[in-house]
Image 1 (cartoon, helix red, strand yellow):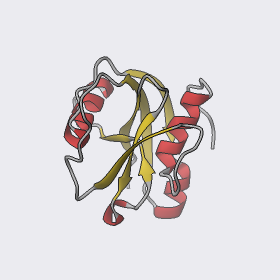
Image 2 (tube, rainbow, N blue to C red):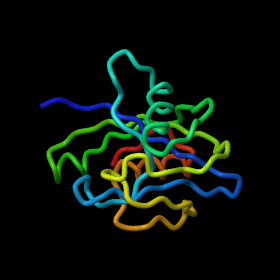
Image 3 (cartoon, rainbow, N blue to C red):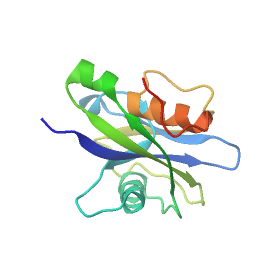
Length: 139
């Protein structure tokens, strides 16, 4: 078994809301920020830009790494171990679209203080770090 490195991208609009997607049942039916696995040779920023374009059709500018999450709860429950590099991007306009409807069925702008449930662990961890201005926390 190996540990997978992914990115999670918080996209924030001018109202302080973040963009979330509802994953479909075959991809664990949780709410989550967007992101994905880092490809070999790819920077975290390149991965964030590519994944956001692939998943919701938006072009993000200048995403910034702000934290890292070790998603151990998911490992304990499902046997999948991911480490998430968390990035922040300002919403630059354009209409987010469901580019992969087989993976994601709904988009919402959400107050980060009131996250919908059930919520994906890596997403919850990333949002918590951002809200608390932390780089890393245990658990």
